[in-house]
Length: 122
Image (cartoon, rainbow, N blue to C red; front, side):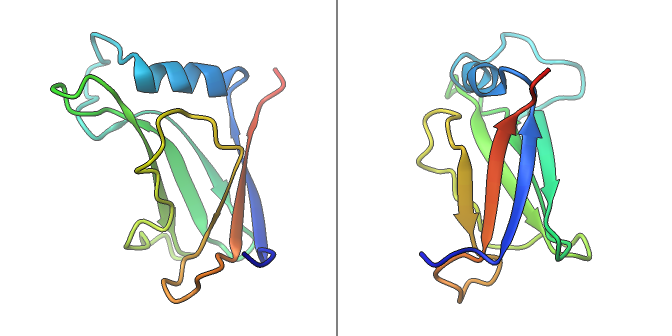
């Protein structure tokens, strides 16, 4: 992959990697009112200098599967969701990614966006 043109940082809570991983692998038995299957349980966002925004976190999985899953949505500068799931988390079994390189344009095989994921210090 070539060097990305745009970089942004998504900050998750202190100890978030461990806690979000636990939420993925050990779903809570009860969910807050209004949180249903495919809704986010925890999430954060990041905005790139060209206006592209990433919203990502852990979403509620099907009750029959007994696990939750990471989900990232990408929006263009006009806040329209980019189709085709530019950030594919289908092979994630834990919340351990520290950076994700992706493309908004499906014809861009290199991915000109780099999302760094960091934990807050306090």
